[in-house]
Amino acid sequence: MLYIILLTYRQPLDVVERHLEDHRSFLAQHYRAGHFLLSGPQEPRQGGAILAQAPDRATLEGWLREDPFHAHGVADATVVAWQPTLRAPGIAAAIAPGAALANGTATR
Image 1: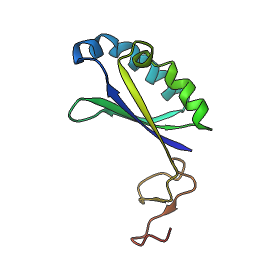
Image 2 (image 1 turned 60 degrees about the vertical axis):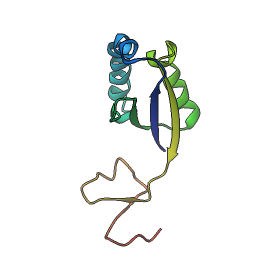
Image 3 (image 1 turned 90 degrees about the vertical axis):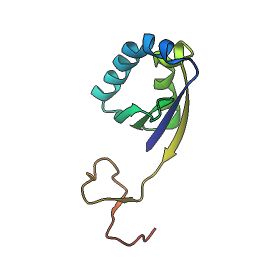
Image 4 (image 1 turned 45 degrees about the vertical axis):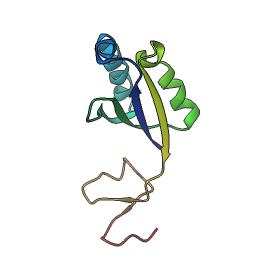
């Protein structure tokens, strides 16, 4: 299952910056494990977003509790479970194994 995680900052950017290095270490750990696929700040910079894959929501929420942004009350996380059904030709099937290759016509 894929998950879109939207992080919304609860603290001013100077507080966010103090925890950013630890947050990036947290992200790196999950990239190495194959859990996180994409991440980055929102524009305007009011939070961030992560595209993750996890066996279930409870596992993902456990990982998110380890995020220094969570531990220090820097950001709230909104988790959206997402099951893609179509993918563009340039997107690898490994990212969304159940998604059919889009051919210009939505069939699902």
